Length: 169
Image (cartoon, rainbow, N blue to C red; front, side, top):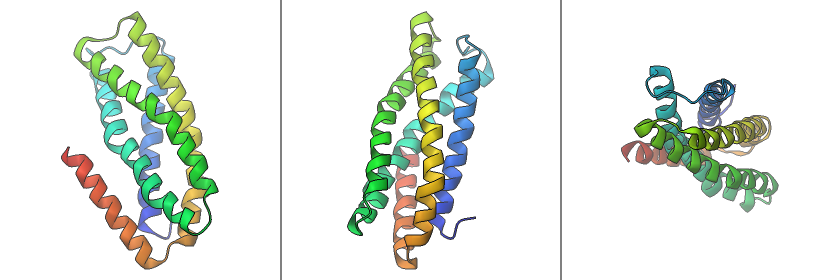
C-alpha cells in the first residue's frame, strides 16, 4: 500500500488507534460507567491509558520533531502546522483520559468522573478519527512522494528508537 516503512508503520498505528477509538466510543455510547469488575472494561481502561501515553503521544512527537520539520525545510509547512494544531487540542484530552482511566482502574467511576471521562473520550474520538483520516489522505501519500531512501532510513531508525524508548519506560 505504501512505498516506505515510515508510511507503512504510521498507517499500522493509525489502524490500531481507530480500533481503540471504536472500542472507546462503544463503551461511552452505552451511557453506563465502565465497570472495572468487567474484564473487557478493565482491559479498555488499561489499553486506553497505555496507548495514549506510549503510542499516541510518541506518534505526535515524532511527527512534529521529525516529519513536519523536514517538510518545513523544503518549504511545505502548511500540513505540519495544521496537524500540529490538531495535536495541541488532542494532547490535553489524552492526558485527561490517561488520568481518569488510571483513577477508574484503581477505584471505578463515580458520576462526576464518568461524566468527565465520557465527555473527554467522545471529543477525543471525534477529533482523532478526523485527524487520522487527514493523515491517511494527505500526510502518508506526501511522505511516499517526498522521502528518498536515505531520509526514509534515517527517519525509520529514529522512529524505531523512539518506540523502543517508550516501551522501556
